[in-house]
Amino acid sequence: MNVTQDLEIWTLVASASLVVKFVMALLLGVSFMSWLFIFRKMFAIRRARAETETFEKEFWGGNDLNLLYQGAVNNRHSIGSLERIFEAGFREFSKLRGQRGTDASTMVDGARRAMRATYQREMDVLESHLSFLASAGSVSPYVGLFGTVWGIMHAFRGLANVQQATLAQVAPGIAEALVATAIGLFAAIPAVVAYNRYSHDIDRLAIRFESFMEEFSNILQRQTARG
Image (cartoon, rainbow, N blue to C red; front, side, top):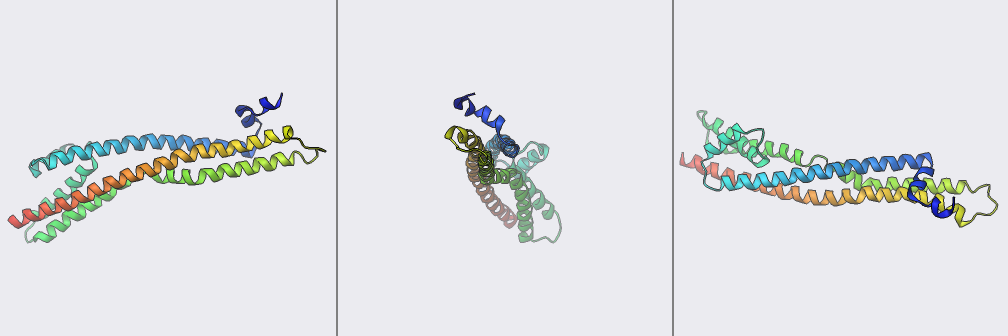
């Protein structure tokens, strides 16, 4: 087998040491999980954005709040995050409004707290698996570097009993070690790009949710003022 054949990717992987093979397998597993979460999160954010826009159009279109609330209750398992926030706030507001001796500020504060609790739950769902992408993006290059360092050490140890080392003897061992770094970068780069993009998109959605909660609280405040 000549040097060119020795430097083929599959040959390098097959001839790597056990530790380097383990590192490569670990990084490929991390890469697979990263791509799985990338696609799942992409569809989830796209759906959340569409559901938010749809509900905002219905809410600001002049529809009756009681009708919107009833529709949210009837379709509780299929509504979006913003509609769940609205449902939680209006449900708490209606409950407090039906109690005697409850003042206006208590009703609005109760609705705001209910919306805030639902908001936190919805944000936890939207932000799920982002920490994995962040960890994969930051740790994978170092894991790949560990595999490379170990592979180079293994390659040079193999030359300990050789009288005269040549490039043909050293190159395959170094090349197979560098494959680990390449796989580490392959796992890290998409994870970092996806994490930054999805964090930005989720922050935009969070701002829309918080703005809605403030505006809806003002609407409830005006309703209590009118009696």
